[in-house]
Amino acid sequence: RDVSPDAVPSAGAAPPVAAKSAAARDDRLHVLHSWSAHGALDPLVVTGASGVHFHDESGRRWLDFSSQLVNVNVGHQHPKLIAAIKAQAEVLCTVAPYHANPATSEAARLIAEVAPGDLNRVFFTNGGAEAIENAIRMARLHTGRHKVLTAYRSYHGATAGAITATGDPRRWASEPGAPGFARFWGPYPYRSAFHAATAHEECERALAHLADTIMVEGGQGIAAIVLEPVIGSSGVLVPPDGYLQGVRALCDKHGIMLIADEVMVGFGRCGEWFAVDRWKVVPDLITFAKGVNSGYVPLGGVIMSDAIAASFESRAYPGGLTYSGHPLACAAAVACIGIYKDEGIIDHARRLGDEVIDPALQAIQKRHPSVGDVRGLGVFWAIELVRDRNTREPLVPFNASGADNAPMTMFAAACKQQGLWPFVVGNRLHIAPPLIIDEQTMREGLAIIDEALATADRYCVG
Ligand code: PLP
Image (cartoon, rainbow, N blue to C red; front, side, top):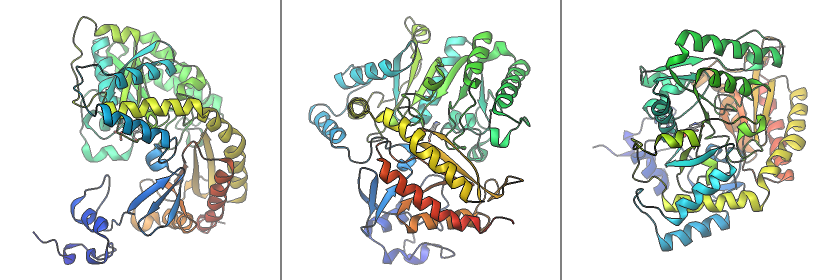
């Protein structure tokens, strides 16, 4: 096996292996990263973090405007969270999921208490994709039906069922995928699939389209509609008022389970415990992960209605995971939910969105021809960049890579030059710092973005 520096591809490649730290070298030789071609990959070696910042091995400090993957809601290295994990580790690190234990029981109760309606029972997983797999399985078992409807422009995870449910290009490589899925278009006022002129029209037409989809797919055979209440990595798409209520009504009419995928937006990201709370919609199942414990220990899960939970009173639920309800992860969830409450983080996120981020982005949009649209809620926003505001031609082509993606790469580099770690997806910058970010730091970050947008403006026509 050739592990010499020469074995590393050189075209556009990372620095030679020999010149790097042990961490970088081992990574280069032994780690396969998600969603990445490794030839030119040169990941930052992160060695520490605190609050809204992390630092790399060179000692450089970064303002984390991505919360890693929209994850570290209470900030890095929160002392109460670390203490809770340490305390649990002293007592009980692991236990089989057929036992009960205090950390898992308390986490489930706290999650049920903040969940809407009668969603009172939790099935724990290790992350978001497993939560989706299990929510779909529960809906199928509960209804006795098999078909699942999911939205184009969505992301639900990378396991077999979850990637099939996904409506973004990442699923293409794993197609044909799992059977039993059909897709529909959801609302996206800036790029309406329905040629709608207003948010109200977009809502009405998206609901009519979903009703048609249910009709042609056969309402009697549909177990579930899976959707992200606020779409995350496919664009930070906030639905028009009335849309989620309309989907709920269609589900009720046809006996379909509504699965709200809150993996990215649950636990405060949108200024509510769950994004559905903003519209007072109660799904049958909610999937969660990330913010439940701010990602300190892997944890996800499904919260289900009493009716679905009742399905598994007299028959076994046919699914399980060795680490379901892992005590360390659940102790972290207990502490994290306590932090959200004690520090008023969710109200802070809502206020920050309404009073600081929204007005600042409106002003940024006015200043920069490359900014086509700004949208979001709480501490979850997107700036969508265009080459031409009149035609709304995206600044980079859909699914751009290499030279095609140069305008976004330059824009990201300009953010990084000022110490801000950006979260760039396609022709968009997603803005998702930890929810604990204070107003001044938020304004500083937005000022960096404002300045960096000058690089994108250069690519605009006219
Ligand atoms: N669902 C949504 C909405 C997500 O954003 C993600 C991940 O970003 C997932 C599911 C998959 O979660 P995981 O990566 O923990 O499997």
